Length: 71
Image (cartoon, rainbow, N blue to C red; front, side):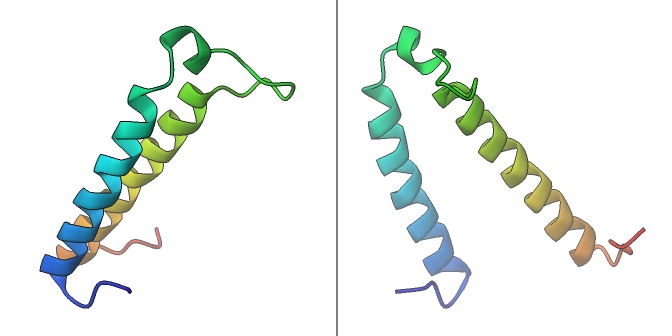
């Protein structure tokens, strides 16, 4: 069920982040940095997603501040 307001979004996000953290806690450190056949590791994927989440948060903040996000 999609979140319908800020409170629900925060709750869903926290629940999903906890699930992700639990999975990542089970990944041994040496395996997390081991690359697959395409040269990509678990650490690469998590870092990439974290970077996009940071950019998204910046876009939201810019939009709320009335900044032109298309320049």
